[in-house]
Amino acid sequence: MSVGGVVADANLLMAAAVAFAAGVVSFASPCVVPLVPGYLSFMTGLSASQLARAGSNRLRIAGGGLLFTLGFAVPFTVLGLTAGALSRALSARPWQIVMGLVVALLGLAYAGLLPGTAPGRERRLRASGIDRGLLGALPLGFVFGVGWVPCIGPALAAIFTLAAAQSAGSALRGGFLAFVFALGLGLPFVLIGMAFHQASGALSWARRNARRLQLAGGLMLSAVGVAIATGAWTRLVAELQPLVGRFTPAL
Image (cartoon, rainbow, N blue to C red; front, side, top):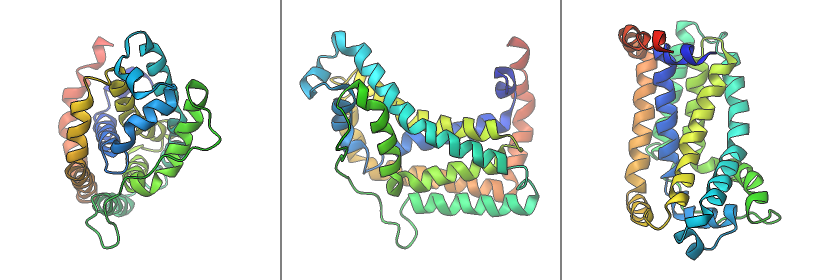
């Protein structure tokens, strides 16, 4: 899958935009965003006061954040590759309807609108046995990806289902969508860490509005699922493809 092929594929670009947005919203969920300072401190080995005086520690913060992101991006991407590989067998229209409905239901579950799917709550950081600092950032990311599945699981499952529905038999496309979701979830850690003092207001706003953001993200995923099930997604891709294709010659 070349860069030109990605840019020229309206279907993949739209799915990637949804995956990235779902990752960002998952970061802002009620059970993740309150613990951002704790995670930043753990993955970098820096105290809150040192984070606020980033200065010469920017490289350390960026390195810790990227290793942390890689820690959960790797297993997410492997699962995405699997979903993409299954997409050829699920390409028939009846399966597209089923998977679209599954994405819609998972979106409602993430939004907490289905019975028994209350919005995720703040959880404590439990990472006993993992070193603080850069050495522990990678395994901490893996623990984060596994331990926070009850909170971000519906959104992540929706992205895997989207990958299975829209990868056209390509494992690489499925892995790409899962990796983009991981970037949407992980890059805010890096950006906030790099500007921790200036980002305190943004974190406070995200805490106050976490439930609204989670609801909006869940409804977005549900809308995508309905679009896939009804064929509206395919029609939109067909309309956008000629416009997106114009970027190809420039690459």
